[in-house]
Every structure is written in structure tokens, then in C-alpha cells.
Image: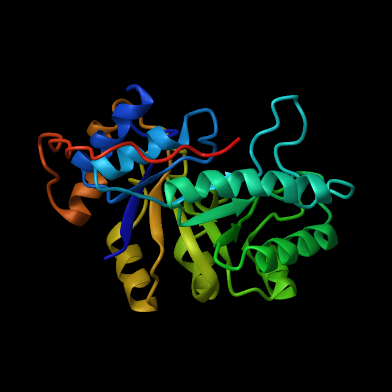
Length: 264
């Protein structure tokens, strides 16, 4: 059975951030993630991971641009030095969180040649890090998995893989299994949502899990959707797969000290 993670940007969002970890664990998730956790102290996030025995699957890089610029610039000409500089900051946060991967965001004005060069530099400079790229929308230079796979082939790095968003595939009227099957050997992460961006009740999840198991998929499936009402009230799909989750949140572990803080 695949491993499931909760996207804390969307699930349990009616709670303060630091209490979402225990809620995710109680609901039956083994891991959590946020695309942009940079506003919270990384040491506090790590503390919650340790106390609740959770794994942090990933985050996006580079960090957000608070001055109103592009949401990503891994493929933007003239921003190569900035990309590598901000990547170091993202990696410092990822190191504190023991994150499974960093998703590198090309940006809506990306040039594929610049993107490939930046990815090669990132993968070579940080060989122990795991990076992902994924589709960024129909109007972007990375509209689908095929385009992303082409960049992957150009880069040719073992520490670069693909991510897929099943909700986005459903929203386009396509069959998620048919779409991801050719790329399963290159997939490192899967985001899960329904076609409407809410609970994935419109999917054959048993068939999906069996398909991923048969293909030997080792990554996480991250629930990344907006609940219709409460998160807990919309988790019937997860309970059908893993069985009934605990009814009470687990007692926190005794802390032996707080994890170190990320540097600037």
C-alpha cells in the first residue's frame, strides 16, 4: 500500500499550524508537507514532526518572493545566480526538516534551456538532495508530465524526479492512471485530489493503490485538496484504504530538547 501524507496548507487548516501535526497523525497519515513553510520557524516544525513521529515529504524552492515578483524563477533567464543563492536557503530549511525532496518551480516565464542548466547545477552541487519538477499549468513551459520528462532526460541526474497532481489530471477530463503509468519509473511524488479540488471521492483509489504497488512505486501520495467541510469529516476515502484511524490524538512524546534552528 502506498504511503500517505497530508498537505498542511489545506488539511486541518481550521487549527493553528503547530496543532495540525498531531491531528494528521491521529487521522492516519504517516507524513506531512507544506509547499512554502518559510514563515514558520523550521525548528518548531521539526519539533512537531519528532513529537508526532511524522516524516516531512517536501517543500517548494525557491522561497516565495514577497516583493510581488514571479512565483518561481528556476528557469528565468538572468536569475541564475539568484536561483542558486535562494536554493541554498531552501536547502537549509529542508535540512532541518529532514525533508524528502525539494520541488523546483520553473515559473510562468521559464525558458527550458535555462531551466535545464539550473537543474543540472543544483543536482551536481547538491548530490545528496532530492529534487522534483512537475507540471505548472497549461500556460507554462511545463504543461504536462511529457514536457517535464523531456527536461528530466536533458538533465540526466539521478537525484531529479517527477511529481504528478492527480486532481489536475482529473480536472482536465483525463484518466489519472493512464496519464501517470508511462512515467511511474520516474515519479517521486504524487498529489491527490478530486476533479473539483476537494476530496478524491471521484477516483478508484483501490485501483490506484494496487496499480502503484504493482509498479513498485516507493514515493508518497499526498492528500492536497480543500475539504468540503472539516478535514476529519472528509477522510472516508483514507479510512477505506488504511482502516479506521485512531479516534483520539496520540499523546505527545517527551521532548529531549528542541531541534536546531535553520539559519537565515
